[in-house]
Image (cartoon, rainbow, N blue to C red; front, side, top):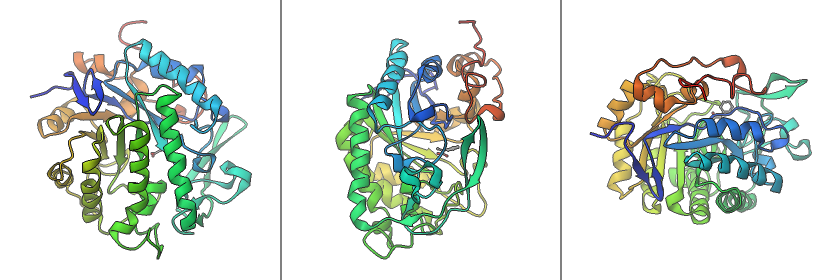
Length: 369
Ligand code: 8OZ
């Protein structure tokens, strides 16, 4: 039986253990440019088998929160290059998470103060945050305008270019497509956000079309064996809902299977919340079976509220990788702590989003260094 500390392959990526740092929004990139503090933060956590960066905007239009880094300007790619070099110097493996927020944004964050975009002109009942005078302020998201069908190829191209530059310019080992948590690609998938009557709305096949077009482009650009995807079939995050997630996601996984992806990353339950949702039942084993039965051989990565004991159970049950979020905020040496059974530092919510080194790079390790 594999343990968390055994090496594993995920497509072309040779990982030294099965512990993954989950993507975590930290809002410490003023001007959307990754900086030296971020390089230090990721390098501190390089002993993970795989680091997935915070969601990183593929375009200015894809931005939805203050001080999120981007992958659409030369200085952003150069900033990320310093991050990947710092992680690689410590023997780590790092992929970046490609993000377009869709309707979860605010006019203050959009090019020219325009409305954010979504599948339909339906506002998400959720908040985003801006930083004003150094303080985080929560605001209602702005009502989006519906994307026209002829704009969608441009969005696919934004993802393709970002994937290509992530690997080719910024030096990432690969990319993860953010298709979870109520952002653009999840908005197209799910019926409460997608009420289109063209080829991108209505049937399951139509609602999955944009995701699959983007996935194909990203896998071509980064190499399929260096590409993963993150999905959240039932999370209510960002006011997203589909009445029939099981057939929807089994369809998506069957379509992804032949692409030869490195991994599939699945959030079980409500993102950062309960793993079981009585009003949103979902069979995650059946989802993995749908993928495997269709020939999918990527590593199966699970996420949401894992501790060492639950992670061991998941590995025994067929998962290949376990992603840890909040534990990684507070424990740069999480691998060593899990290995030795040492207690974990507790994360401080007040410093999750925005700010500087406090609550970011100053969590203590077991051994000073
Ligand atoms: C927390 C705060 C802001 C954004 C996600 C990118 O949920 C996020 C996010 C999380 O995927």
